[in-house]
Amino acid sequence: MVKHLIESYLMGPKTLRQAVAGMIREQLVSRPVPGKWSTLEVVCHIVDSDEAWIHRMKRVIAEERPLHIGYDERCFAAALGYQERDLEEELSLLELSRRQMAHILRILPAEAWNRVGVHNEYGLLTLQQHVQTMVDHIPHHVKFIGEKRRALGLAS
Image 1: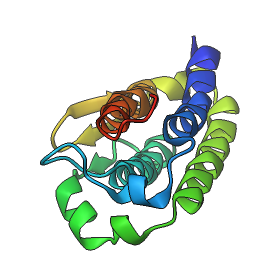
Image 2: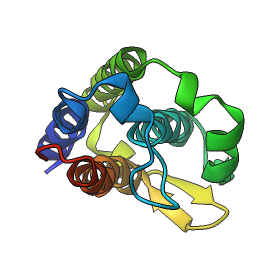
Image 3: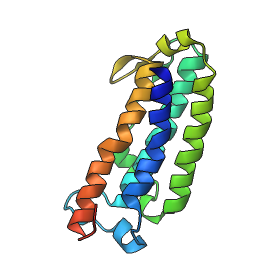
């Protein structure tokens, strides 16, 4: 189970790369679905979210019942220059961060997967639930990237 979860976690960046394949910068920064983020903003959100969850996972592994504080993703998108960021840099960062975290996860004893953190919005979360959250996050957003691709007349 844990081995499969780690492999699924590592597949996320490939799934995201495939979702944005062939898109030019103009398409990446356009907002073809009214009221929704651009594809580049979605990618940046995924990367920033991954960084936050990786930090949380490391704290769960290293500390006793650490407190996790949520953040407002809309503020991140507005203040952190998502539209000016580089797609390849974001994707590479995601790949590298997940590879590093997967290495850490692979060497953990079985009991570590039941360690918990306390999220101010979600309550108690085991390490396994943290990883599952990240496994589910990219496919959730890839659906929205597909919607944007279709709105732009691109194959999804």
